[in-house]
Length: 191
Image (tube, rainbow, N blue to C red; front, side, top):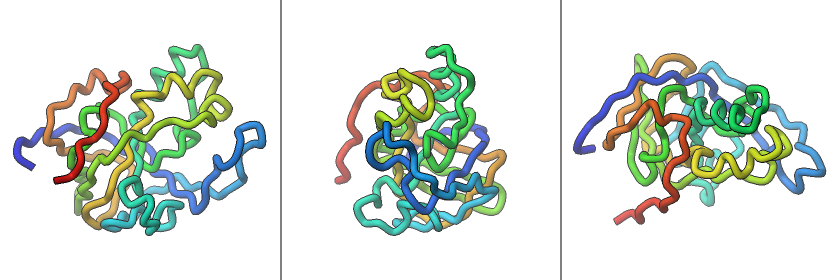
């Protein structure tokens, strides 16, 4: 990382689920799968979060850990006139407060906490699926575009815990834009 920008964030949720809950058509209803809002998770480089549905699947290596801004869900609920959403229903692994995520697309970032750090590469947007209209509120699918989070490849092994953290970024971020949609752009291809 060349330039370094540091931001105080909070990890407010850590979702771990061994299976997909939103498979098939939304009208069929979500699958009843165990989902944990863990106090801590083990992240393994190149594999993901131990115990999660994406762990160790080669097809999901660049998307094994998903990040979401809590402010994005709050802004979407307000725009739709809906009550606050349960962040776990969006099915993203790491829900952060205080982080503008879209500028990190294609970049390496670090989440530091006392006792360790986890380095991630934000490989692509976490595009929302049609299920969001069913499990969050009508219109949520469209409203989440550009702020559905990031799908990341874990580059190092470490532990993440709910609570205060430092997000280390190679690009400047605007915390006031944490809930705003980002520009639609593709992540650069690795060299």
